[in-house]
Image 1 (cartoon, rainbow, N blue to C red):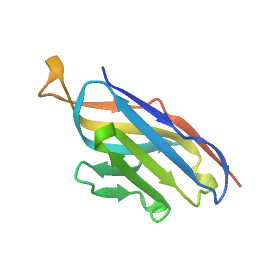
Image 2: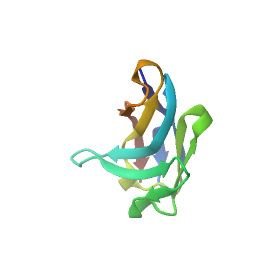
Image 3: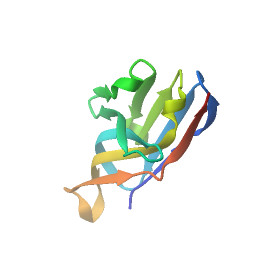
Image 4: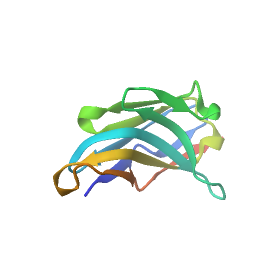
Length: 124
């Protein structure tokens, strides 16, 4: 019923920038939390950044000052601006939407959805 589609990943040299986008589609009433996770080969998936419905943000220490998360509630979208990229940022980045309220028959319930992931590769 609800789908999250990421875009904007790719190959970039160290020090470069990328902007990831995630658009949620479906019968969505509201989303409490939108976030970006990442998973590198051999590592667990980790939370990179999140933004609440009221605009409050939180970042993992390693990306503070370099990454900026933002959201557009009207468009049910979340973005991650990544600057000063480092090789250790290389990973598959996943969009997450939590506390999703949907319309129709499921009104009143909350759900969690994941995007399919987008590859970010930073060369040294």
